[in-house]
Image (cartoon, rainbow, N blue to C red; front, top):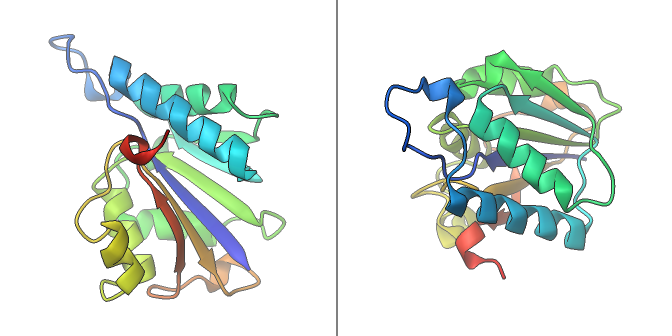
Length: 172
């Protein structure tokens, strides 16, 4: 079995006029949300074997704050390719991972994350409807999926089992 976690960057700041999108930092609300997700991961023992993170400042800062709550540092690779990537590009990236990685986390952006999530679970999934995933993938939210495959290359659309969909507003 393989597990994939998608962590959308937390709420970003828009208070610096003229700042390039890639350089936007987190808003105070985003910092609190990232800390909540970090505590959740620590409490549940949901530590990924590898994290692939967008190079956008808001994604990097989200991951930094999450890691502050964890019992150990996670192996991380920062990838320009995750910045505003589409669902097909992310699926290709996931399928290319080394099979020694059992639980993989991606830290990135919407709308790609939402589209990837719907592609993997299928739009008719009742759990996706119940959790609100069909409607929205909020900032700072964490999606946890499982796949009944032995290698990443075997992941196919519509085969994910939704284990959890955590939204920062619903935590604490």
